[in-house]
Length: 207
Image (tube, rainbow, N blue to C red; front, side, top):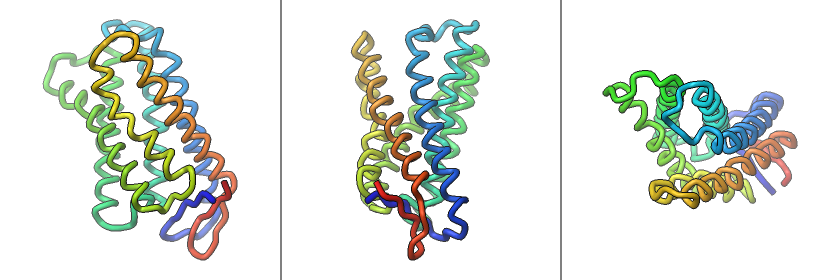
C-alpha cells in the first residue's frame, strides 16, 4: 500500500490531477535533462547549445518544484511549523537555482556577486532535497515504495563529491542516479495520483 496523506482533503480531483501531473513532469524533466547533458557539457557555450541545455535543466527543476508542491500539499514531512518552514525555504532555493540556470544559459552576469549568489542556490537546493527526503522517510506519511524511493532519489546531493572529481565516472553516476531516482519516482508519483481516493481524512492509493 502506498499512501499520500493530506491535512484537509476536500475534493479528491484536486489531489489526483496535480499529483499525476507532478509525477509526469518530474519524469519527463529528468529524462530531458540527462538526455541533453552529452550535447551541452561545455558550460562555456552560451549559444544554441547553452540555451538548449538550460531549457532541459529548467524542465528538470520544474519537475522538482512540482514534487515539492505535492510533498507540501500532502504534508509529507509532517504538518508542523518547522516542516512547513523548511519546505518554503526549499521553494526559495529552487527559485534561485532556476534563475542561475537561466543566467548560465544566456551567459549573463557571470563572475559577478549576483551570479555567485544564484549559483550557490543549486547545490544548496539539492542539499535541502536530501534533508526533505530523510524527513519524508522518517515521517512515514508516504508509505510503501514511494516513501523509500523518495529518500533514494533525493539523496542525489551525496554524489556531488563524485561529480567534482571530473571524468566519465563523474558524469555517469549522477546521471544514472537522476534516471533511476527522480525519473522513476515521477512514475511512482503519477501512478499514486492516478489511483488516489479519500479515506478517513487521508489520501490513499494502492501500489
